[in-house]
Amino acid sequence: MFEAVIVDAVRTPLGRRKGSLALTHPVDLLGGVLSQLVEKNALDAASVDDVIVGCVDQVGEQGGNVGRNAWLSAGLPESVPAASLDRQCGSSLQALAFAAQGVMSGSYDIAIAAGVESMTRVPMLSTIQIQGHPMTENLKKRYRLDRWNRDFFDQALGAEMIAKEWGLSREDLDRYGWRSHQLAAAARAQGLFKNEILPLEVPVDENSQTMRLFAEDEGIRPDTSVEKMMGLRPAFPDLELVTAGNASQISDGASAALVMRKDVAERLGLTPRARFVSFAVVGVDPITMLTGPIPATKKALERAGLSVSDIDLFEVNEAFASVVLAWQKEIGAPWDKVNVHGGAIALGHPLGATGTRIAATLLNALEERQGRYGLIAICEGGGMANAAIIERIAQ
Image (cartoon, rainbow, N blue to C red; front, top):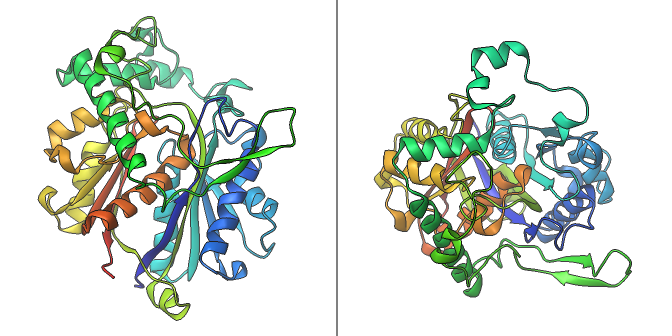
């Protein structure tokens, strides 16, 4: 088996819904990231064996294999194929796993894993609102969705149920949301995102040809407080605890990682930054839905032969504050190792782009802190979760 390494991982700044990326077509948004990744690493684009892209709402502007369209839109070689996949919020982490596994097996020498989501231009749940509905009567009956007056698996309901099951108060959730903003603001102020963010030229407004540079995440609120967060109303009429302040932001963005065989990287004069240690994918109850990071973390650790104490940094996607708080109670990871640069509550959660965005953030945080092992875990719609462990390669 070949050793697969990450040579680079990059992302756009994340834009708020209807914010700085709202006027950028998702195909061009991802295309810009792919072309810059190739250029930054002085890579012959024709040498890439495959491009694997995560995207959740693959319809409209994100339909028709958004990964292939983005590659071609960027003017990159037609000879390179691409595929787009949907594992909900973990889509691009799954793309990263598939890219690495392809390299390990010998199927690829070089692959790119990426993700994109323009939640402004292709709203969340677009794929199930245009025509038909995936929830059959069998699914509704099996999970007795009528108990909650639902006809679909509802993540917000799951987040609220998790909070109550683990004894988390509204203040607990809001304090965690505040923590995310504080850590993200501190990381931005210290320039800790600069090595992962690719600044973009974006239109000033819809009617202007004038462009401006968009270089920083725009969802971070450094001046927020726990008191302000506790003053927010619940985001859903039949729920009590979930608010816009303790849940991930609806965002636009794209991200990508360059993966290759270690010996190929060295032959090309590129520096491997991390190697892959283990992967895990799990399924859980689709009603509570978001508990998957707990068994996924345990499975990834077991496969790696590692314990919680061996991991230097953890990145658990902040879909909702209750997800991370419940995970920490079960796993016992020290808080000073968890989401140290903030997470999706502050930065945003462009669904398909989040996995490789987190990989970029984790890789840079490991390098900044001279850590060795980093673990990623992401909860996913329908009751699933992905996890991965990477090891920084010391230079």
